[in-house]
Image (cartoon, rainbow, N blue to C red):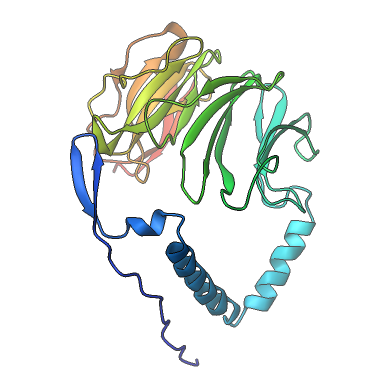
Length: 289
């Protein structure tokens, strides 16, 4: 095997800057890399060139690229997996010949659909936009779209009416919304986000009921892990709060169909669990001996 030359990474000089989130202040030496400046773009271009040259120099690059192109051309969807809800199929993708993401709804998983959101309309290269996630409601009549721009992630949350395209929710009081879970009747949804007034290390869970003001207080739950998120059971009746996205454990459960309170479930059990509720029984694969 021929030894590869060490990579000569572009330099990123530290530029200390004081940053404040709520009551927390800290020093960030590399925040300039998140800015849309000429210096940042130049550094990103050097990184991109370095990575491109490295990947193209790998022994199996040509055969791998050929294989990927064949697989992509073999399907009108490429590698995009649509989501099914309420008799409809939803997907976010970038069509051939266009620069930015669109959100579509269709009556078939492989058909081109009607556009609900199109970032190619009125878009500029100075502020590229992308879809981070889409979450259709169980009845297929509403959809949560989380999107961002200029290289950031999970900046904006909107809820659209699928039929009319009207924006039902535009923004939340918190930042960086990540996990979404609709209520069984599509009347609202749980989401996780950071609230600078509470913590920038622990993500919190909020309940947004459509037609009511946006929530400012998180669900009243003990924070058993910095990363906790909601998940609806397959039968739609129950809602979980899962702790630790890497070693998942449903710490809390509630009967969402009866608007019941949160109850401790597997909280404190030193194991991971992956499963769901079937006929009122939780069946899971676990690391517990």
